[in-house]
Length: 61
Image 1 (cartoon, one colour):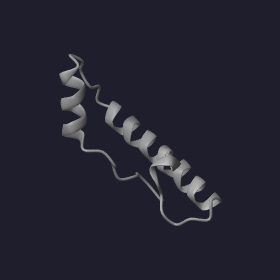
Image 2: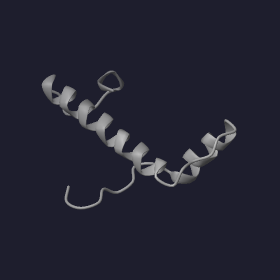
Image 3: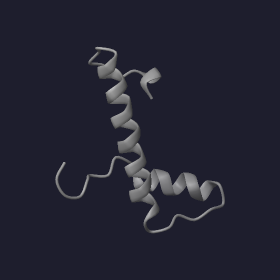
Image 4: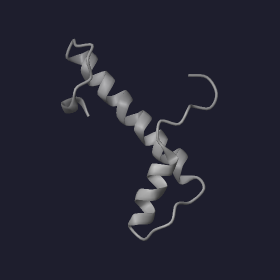
C-alpha cells in the first residue's frame, strides 16, 4: 500500500472506550492503534495462507 494507510478503527468508539476507563487519548494514539490492527490482520492472513485457506478465522488472530 503506497502512502498513508487508511484507518481501520472507529476513532470515536476507541476514544469513548478509553474515556470510559477514566483515561485520555493522545493525538497520535489512534494511528498507532490502527497500525497494530494492520499488523494483526497481516499475521492472520499469513497464517490463513499457510493453512491453505482463503478465509480468515478467529483462530488465525
